[in-house]
Amino acid sequence: MLPIFRPLKDPAVATVWSGLAASTIGEDLFRVAVVWIAAEQIGNAAGYVNAAQYGAMLVVGLLGASVIDRWRADRAMIGAKYASAVLALMPVAGAYVWGVSIPLLVLAVMGIAALRMVFTPALQSAVPVLVPDRDAMQAINGLFDATWRLARLIGPMLAAVLNSILPVIHFLSVTAAGFILSGLAIWAVRDRLIDPTHQPQRGRAGLHGVWDALRDGARLMRRERTIGTLLLVNALANGPWSVALQLCIALMVKQHDPRLFDFEGLAALGLIIGVSGAGDVVGNLIAGSVRFRRPLATMFLGYVAMGAGFALIAVAAWVLPNPWMLPAMMAAGLLAGFGGPFYFIPMITRLQTAYRGPEIARVFRLRLAVMAGSMLGFNLAATPLFDLLGPTLTEFLFGLLILALGIGGHLYFGRIESRPQKLPS
Image 1 (cartoon, rainbow, N blue to C red):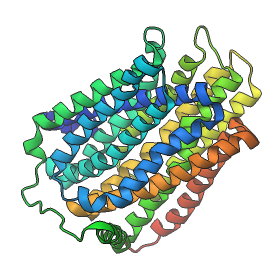
Image 2 (image 1 turned 180 degrees about the vertical axis):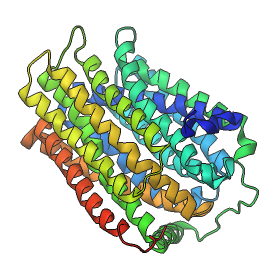
Image 3 (image 1 turned 30 degrees about the vertical axis):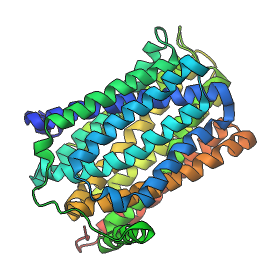
Image 4 (image 1 turned 90 degrees about the vertical axis):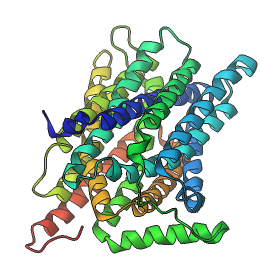
């Protein structure tokens, strides 16, 4: 058995993993549906819908930490999932009254994104409680990260299948069901997620509390400079990644119309993003099971693969006719997806071994806030870039940007790791 699967022998871990899989697959289905509906109704301005969710994440990440850190992790996670289910159903209910409503869709997108800022830091702080064995941390992080990677495979593929039997708006109903199942799974094992040493973070109220939480997160990152740098690099790189994967490809499908057999339109988009998810899963199995001799330099090779894959998706759309265009875009998407886990899993493992309990949540929430700011900026810039350059050239340039980041980081940390002295955590 691969090391990454060994934690599933614990029934509590298997239950949490199953719940996470249900909600993350639903979220990826939600993401495909939202981008497709927005692209159909408002074209290049779909970037603003994406930007709305990152704006919500930024606000909650900056302003909510002083309140959210007082909550117990299990309660925060369960409440976030149930509330997300209600938000996912709002545009569905509205469709029966007003038709498909972009404002309601934006409201749902923003609410679910904000609740993600509640759920994810709570999960990261609960993992060391669920699995106290530090030697098993890489495997458990690889296992939980696999739910997100599997979702990027199954969610878009599910969209391609459901497109023939359900209206796209009802993809959100499936998403809501996934959130409910996830909440029930966490509730079933909540006793294993409670840290008996947990002390609620008491701080000053209002903006003073916000400032204290941000300053504390920044202080913790400065204390562990290597992991702090890795977290910030990852947070910033998510900006071009989000535009390249979530927006450019959808608009490229509408512009270039790649097709193979009966797969076209939303089904073609589902295949490209789904195969990228397959690359995610394969990369996850390797990154979660293997200990690399030079882990930091290897992490950045993940960005080399990701950036090269995005750039090649654009090249395939430019130079290949149908029916070769869609398979080539899928192959390039496979490469792009393969790289992500090589950076993320070692980064999260370092985070959970360098910090403890509430520190993990504070640092991870600051990382999410920086990530949301990066995604917000890039998604706001996406619409004018699409108007000026087109989605295909934008995809190519953002791919080159991520590729350059990967090469630079690999060379820099490769030199550091070749020195005899020990790196800080």
